[in-house]
Amino acid sequence: MRIDILTLLPELLESPLGHSIVKRAQDKGAVDIRVHNIREYGKGSYRQVDDYAFGGGAGMVMTVAPVFELIKKLKAERPYDEIIYLTPDGERLAQPAVNRLSVVTNIIILCGHYKGVDQRIREHLITKEISIGDYVLSGGELAAAVLVDAVVRVIPGVISDETSALTDSFQDGLLAPPVYTRPEEFNGWRVPDVLLSGNHKLIAEWQEEQAMLRTRQLRPDLLNE
Image (tube, rainbow, N blue to C red; front, side, top):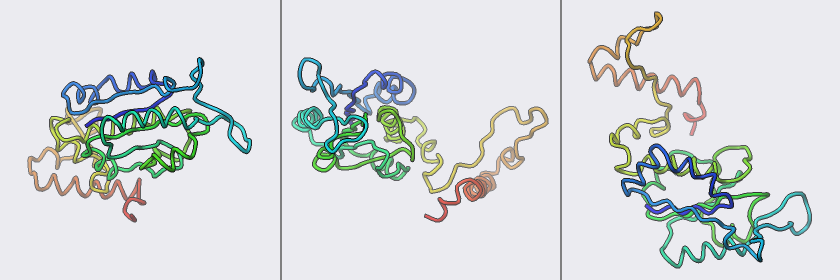
């Protein structure tokens, strides 16, 4: 998979993309992540990429030309399955969308900034708009890191034990059950006996029951979808 991230602040993505599973996925060749600085396509000696909004109002807007030129250049090099704009008013990110993105070939992710990007980019170039939650960040870079991490970890072959990703919360519409490790007892707190029984059928039944119970208690909205 190829992921191209368009940003005004590429340095914000250095750490999230350079460690843990995302780094290992790149080292394996499972994903090729390129970060592009939109300012390189800005206007004039100051590489201007923002301007005042028509009609007035507080805040600046990302101008249309630099984003257009960068996307045009990338699309001339390869086809893209999705061109994603990260914005608070986009579709709420959920695991089914992550799973779908994990099996495509090429995607572009545009990180918003200021009061957002000129609407003409959204209308004519963007194919999907995604929000990671009902709140506003200073820019789309952290949201891009979240999206990339979520997608990369479920690309086939990235995690050595693929069943680990398949048993994460939300994969089956439920929260994951509680997990425990050694020692069996700590500070008087014991691991549930069923997990020590060696009976895989009973363990699976317990895990399913706990997943349903936790979902009903913590995220009942998931059961109504």
